[in-house]
Image (tube, rainbow, N blue to C red; front, side, top):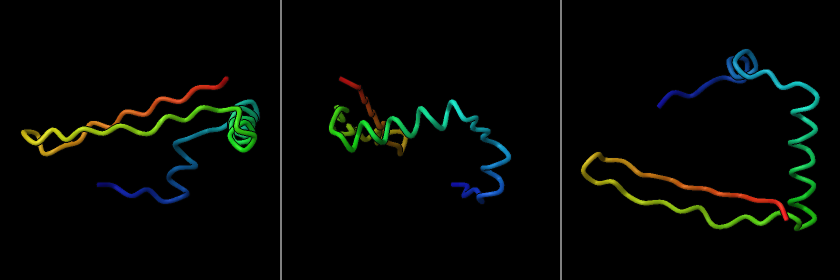
Length: 60
């Protein structure tokens, strides 16, 4: 596993104001319960010593 520093993340991920607005609005929708968030599903894959994780989210 690799752990990235804040500066490494800031160099790799560029967020413009439109992207930040979408993220902000998503958190507002979550706080106002306008967002449906089903539980995260996971399944072990023993023969590969791994796990599959599925997450699906939607907005009403």
